[in-house]
Amino acid sequence: MSTDFLATEFSDHEWPFEISVESFTDAHAVVRVSGNADMVTSPQLLAVINAAMTNYSEVVLDLSQVNFFSSAAIDVVLDAYARRPDSFRVFAPVRPARQVLELFADERLLTEAPAPVVDIRRAPGLQDAS
Image 1 (cartoon, rainbow, N blue to C red):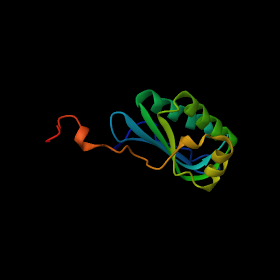
Image 2: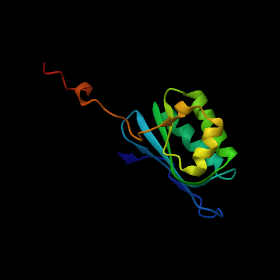
Image 3: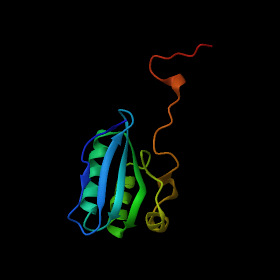
Image 4: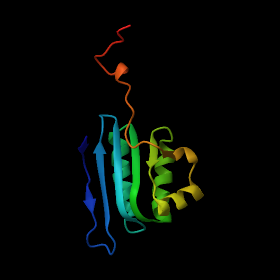
């Protein structure tokens, strides 16, 4: 697991906002957001999600550390989901984010796991011994 690109903090913003991308495999990344996702920070959220979706086939958005989640942020998330409904998910939205997601999002957008579950029997180089 490694932190990849675009780790950003808006320290001059009135409320804290941090976003980073962690790769778990060559195909899977988690975009972690903390602080307030609002009209001021949503362009950065959009840029990071777009970059992650360009570089990874599976992207999970971790909203477990979000304090505020505005309509501008939900627009970014819903757009990403519309573009890749089978490979973009939201993980652990805290109450402010969950309330907005429940109003506007498809229930399939939410996931229970932040990282991929890997079946080691199918991993490259391993063969079934039976």
